[in-house]
Image (tube, rainbow, N blue to C red; front, side, top):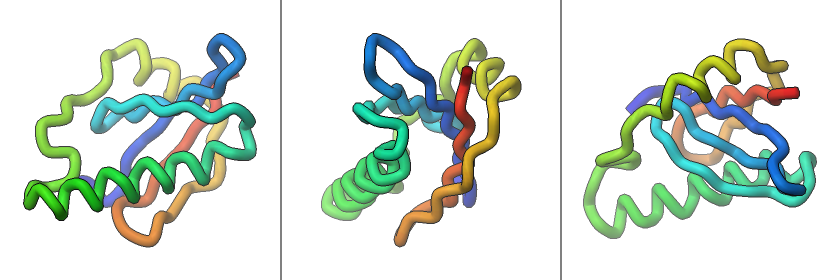
Length: 95
């Protein structure tokens, strides 16, 4: 597992979509200021489930399609998220 994972955040149909790139996942937040907490919540659930199932976190996950990586490259960096357990999350906001 990587020490850092990359995430792109963009607005879609009234929600902030949080899209993982190194390991593709998607979760949503209603407001932009809820994004860091939602990422931390999602990672906490993933790590708890991985421990319970005795598998590596992100086992079986593939990288996101190239179009999301291109969004990330042109997006504005947000402060990194450092959850209690797991990788640092490098987050960028697409306009």
